[in-house]
Length: 134
Image 1 (cartoon, rainbow, N blue to C red):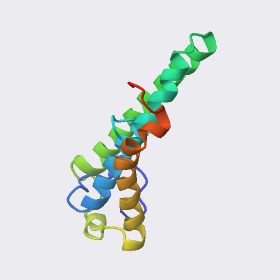
Image 2 (image 1 turned 90 degrees about the vertical axis):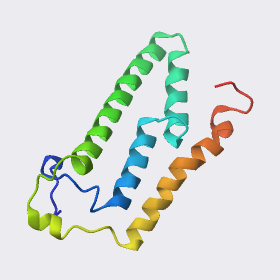
Image 3 (image 1 turned 180 degrees about the horizontal axis):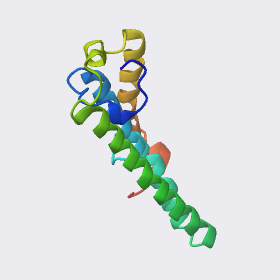
Image 4 (image 1 turned 45 degrees about the vertical axis):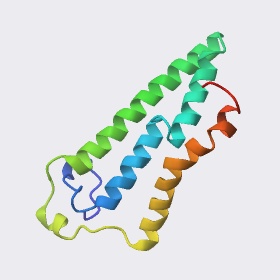
């Protein structure tokens, strides 16, 4: 997009960059702590332990962590919405030259998306503890 950094001037890239869109959606869902993805098991356990400590410090950490999780979800959804699903809002010449990343960049991104999808669920007993009903 010709080095454009303002997401308000970008849009409609879902058809042009489907692999990038998929990877960013998976990464955003993991980042916001969507259930059964990698980020869910780390973020939710931290917030639960902080809130369950029943101290003033624990409650404060839980409150700040909850606000941080909310704003993380907000800006992640906003990023995907502005960049991929809204109507194109940039210069037409930039859209004509837009293309997917080369394999050297796309392969690690797809690999990280795959890890975000499956490693959290398969290793949840290591993170949370074996035999818990969490």
